[in-house]
Image (cartoon, rainbow, N blue to C red; front, side, top):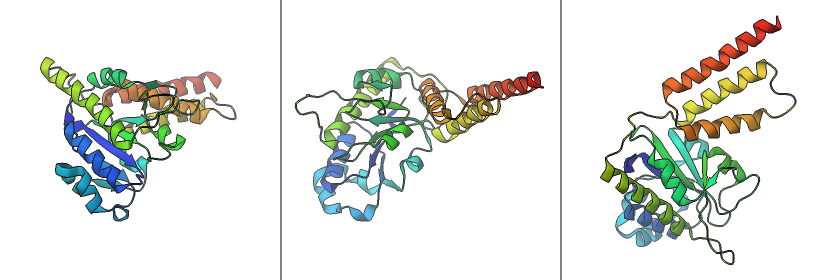
Length: 247
């Protein structure tokens, strides 16, 4: 794992000043790639410049996307930040300290991107946006005043990353392989789902929940291309055997 593997994604931010503060928080912790879901023309560059100070280059180099799905397609891990827990808010939510341990085992390959996704200042991540994430991180705060400023949340998570990278560099630890990205992972999930469907595993419902289950589990496992192909072959062979036995 290294700093160049990380990117921060802001989903439809409202305030230009908040974007400037986010740039500064990222630069404080050596995170250099900013992606934004939204239209660049909707934001005030001068307000961003004032709050970002010497991190204005992060805004100038930011990439813009129409959807979160597009923004994460090249990423191997997608981390959604949320302060709310609930049935639809990811079963697998970790605290920042636990998140640090997870990324500590992530291979140090710049081809394997890790996206950290932050929602709109007022509403946070929607259920649909969080569903696209493979891990949920919850920053605990006061029950009386739980809402964090966007840049404060970014600062906490980016510091967690910065500190973990520092510890890892001290230990010179590397796992030496590249996990597949989300676009490739979705292909594996589709093959699993299609083969299960063909052998009658699903009744009237349940296919979408099963796909989300496999997507979350396999992303956390950080599988390689070879492992993805092996898993696909297992389900294709299982379908063939099931059809043969049926006949």
